[in-house]
Amino acid sequence: MTTETCEREPALLAALRRGRLADDDAAHLAACARCALAVDAERWMAGAVAAFAAPAVPSAGSLLLRAQLRARRDAAERSLRPLRAWRRIVAVGGGAFALFALTRSGGFFAGLWSAAPSSAEAILAAGTLALASLPVWLRLRRDGA
Image (cartoon, rainbow, N blue to C red; front, top):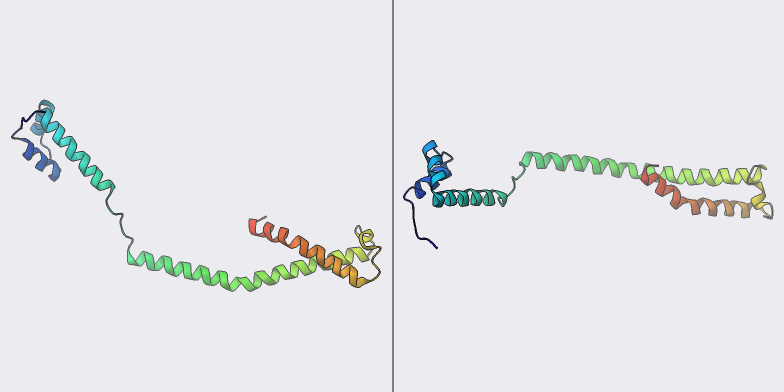
Protein backbone atom coordinates (compact mmCIF):
# COMPACT_ATOMS: atom_id res chain seq x y z
CA MET A 1 0.00 0.00 0.00
CA THR A 2 1.35 3.40 -0.92
CA THR A 3 1.12 6.43 1.29
CA GLU A 4 1.66 8.94 -1.48
CA THR A 5 -0.63 11.93 -1.41
CA CYS A 6 -1.38 14.60 -3.94
CA GLU A 7 -1.86 18.16 -2.81
CA ARG A 8 -4.53 18.73 -5.49
CA GLU A 9 -6.82 15.89 -4.32
CA PRO A 10 -8.93 17.94 -1.81
CA ALA A 11 -9.36 20.75 -4.35
CA LEU A 12 -10.42 18.29 -7.05
CA LEU A 13 -12.98 16.62 -4.78
CA ALA A 14 -14.38 20.02 -3.76
CA ALA A 15 -14.66 21.04 -7.42
CA LEU A 16 -16.37 17.74 -8.21
CA ARG A 17 -18.92 18.29 -5.42
CA ARG A 18 -19.65 21.74 -6.84
CA GLY A 19 -20.06 20.15 -10.26
CA ARG A 20 -17.29 22.12 -11.98
CA LEU A 21 -14.07 20.43 -13.04
CA ALA A 22 -11.77 22.74 -15.02
CA ASP A 23 -9.79 21.71 -18.10
CA ASP A 24 -6.52 21.64 -16.18
CA ASP A 25 -8.22 19.38 -13.59
CA ALA A 26 -9.07 16.90 -16.35
CA ALA A 27 -5.45 16.95 -17.52
CA HIS A 28 -4.25 16.35 -13.94
CA LEU A 29 -6.69 13.42 -13.56
CA ALA A 30 -5.21 11.84 -16.69
CA ALA A 31 -1.72 12.10 -15.19
CA CYS A 32 -2.35 11.39 -11.47
CA ALA A 33 -3.70 7.92 -10.67
CA ARG A 34 -4.40 8.76 -7.01
CA CYS A 35 -6.61 11.75 -7.88
CA ALA A 36 -8.35 9.75 -10.64
CA LEU A 37 -9.13 7.00 -8.14
CA ALA A 38 -10.40 9.51 -5.56
CA VAL A 39 -12.64 11.25 -8.13
CA ASP A 40 -14.01 7.90 -9.36
CA ALA A 41 -14.77 6.85 -5.79
CA GLU A 42 -16.51 10.15 -5.11
CA ARG A 43 -18.63 9.80 -8.26
CA TRP A 44 -19.53 6.22 -7.30
CA MET A 45 -20.56 7.31 -3.80
CA ALA A 46 -22.69 10.12 -5.20
CA GLY A 47 -24.44 7.60 -7.50
CA ALA A 48 -24.98 5.15 -4.63
CA VAL A 49 -26.46 7.84 -2.42
CA ALA A 50 -28.77 8.96 -5.23
CA ALA A 51 -29.88 5.37 -5.85
CA PHE A 52 -30.92 4.89 -2.23
CA ALA A 53 -32.48 8.31 -1.82
CA ALA A 54 -36.11 8.44 -0.75
CA PRO A 55 -38.60 8.64 -3.64
CA ALA A 56 -40.47 11.83 -4.21
CA VAL A 57 -43.60 12.15 -2.09
CA PRO A 58 -46.72 12.93 -4.13
CA SER A 59 -48.37 16.23 -3.44
CA ALA A 60 -51.38 16.49 -1.18
CA GLY A 61 -53.53 17.69 -4.07
CA SER A 62 -52.80 14.61 -6.19
CA LEU A 63 -53.50 12.31 -3.24
CA LEU A 64 -56.80 14.08 -2.59
CA LEU A 65 -57.78 13.83 -6.27
CA ARG A 66 -56.98 10.09 -6.34
CA ALA A 67 -59.01 9.53 -3.17
CA GLN A 68 -62.00 11.44 -4.57
CA LEU A 69 -61.89 9.52 -7.86
CA ARG A 70 -61.70 6.22 -6.02
CA ALA A 71 -64.63 7.20 -3.78
CA ARG A 72 -66.72 8.09 -6.85
CA ARG A 73 -65.85 4.81 -8.56
CA ASP A 74 -66.69 2.82 -5.43
CA ALA A 75 -70.00 4.67 -5.02
CA ALA A 76 -70.93 3.97 -8.64
CA GLU A 77 -70.04 0.31 -8.17
CA ARG A 78 -72.17 0.05 -5.03
CA SER A 79 -75.12 1.71 -6.73
CA LEU A 80 -75.02 -0.78 -9.62
CA ARG A 81 -74.94 -3.93 -7.45
CA PRO A 82 -78.75 -4.26 -7.07
CA LEU A 83 -79.25 -3.73 -10.79
CA ARG A 84 -76.72 -6.42 -11.62
CA ALA A 85 -78.27 -8.80 -9.12
CA TRP A 86 -81.74 -8.30 -10.59
CA ARG A 87 -80.36 -8.75 -14.09
CA ARG A 88 -78.94 -12.14 -13.08
CA ILE A 89 -82.17 -13.16 -11.37
CA VAL A 90 -84.22 -12.22 -14.43
CA ALA A 91 -81.81 -14.03 -16.72
CA VAL A 92 -81.97 -17.23 -14.66
CA GLY A 93 -85.76 -17.00 -14.37
CA GLY A 94 -86.08 -16.30 -18.07
CA GLY A 95 -83.84 -19.25 -18.89
CA ALA A 96 -85.86 -21.53 -16.63
CA PHE A 97 -89.12 -20.33 -18.19
CA ALA A 98 -87.74 -20.75 -21.71
CA LEU A 99 -86.59 -24.26 -20.91
CA PHE A 100 -89.99 -25.09 -19.43
CA ALA A 101 -91.76 -23.61 -22.46
CA LEU A 102 -89.59 -25.63 -24.83
CA THR A 103 -90.32 -28.86 -23.02
CA ARG A 104 -94.07 -28.25 -23.07
CA SER A 105 -94.40 -26.95 -26.60
CA GLY A 106 -93.12 -30.07 -28.34
CA GLY A 107 -89.80 -28.49 -29.23
CA PHE A 108 -86.36 -30.01 -29.19
CA PHE A 109 -86.33 -30.69 -25.41
CA ALA A 110 -89.86 -32.10 -25.27
CA GLY A 111 -88.66 -35.68 -24.85
CA LEU A 112 -86.59 -34.89 -21.77
CA TRP A 113 -89.59 -34.76 -19.42
CA SER A 114 -92.13 -36.76 -21.32
CA ALA A 115 -92.23 -39.23 -18.43
CA ALA A 116 -92.93 -36.46 -15.88
CA PRO A 117 -96.42 -37.03 -14.41
CA SER A 118 -97.09 -33.38 -13.56
CA SER A 119 -96.06 -29.90 -14.56
CA ALA A 120 -94.75 -29.23 -11.04
CA GLU A 121 -92.00 -31.79 -11.56
CA ALA A 122 -91.18 -30.29 -14.93
CA ILE A 123 -90.88 -26.84 -13.35
CA LEU A 124 -88.67 -28.29 -10.64
CA ALA A 125 -86.45 -29.99 -13.22
CA ALA A 126 -86.20 -26.81 -15.32
CA GLY A 127 -85.31 -24.78 -12.24
CA THR A 128 -82.67 -27.31 -11.26
CA LEU A 129 -81.10 -27.12 -14.70
CA ALA A 130 -81.17 -23.32 -14.59
CA LEU A 131 -79.53 -23.23 -11.15
CA ALA A 132 -76.94 -25.77 -12.25
CA SER A 133 -76.01 -23.56 -15.21
CA LEU A 134 -75.86 -20.38 -13.08
CA PRO A 135 -72.18 -20.67 -12.01
CA VAL A 136 -71.13 -21.14 -15.64
CA TRP A 137 -73.18 -18.15 -16.74
CA LEU A 138 -71.84 -15.96 -13.92
CA ARG A 139 -68.26 -16.89 -14.73
CA LEU A 140 -68.81 -16.03 -18.39
CA ARG A 141 -70.26 -12.66 -17.38
CA ARG A 142 -67.36 -11.96 -15.02
CA ASP A 143 -64.74 -12.85 -17.64
CA GLY A 144 -66.43 -10.55 -20.13
CA ALA A 145 -67.53 -13.21 -22.58
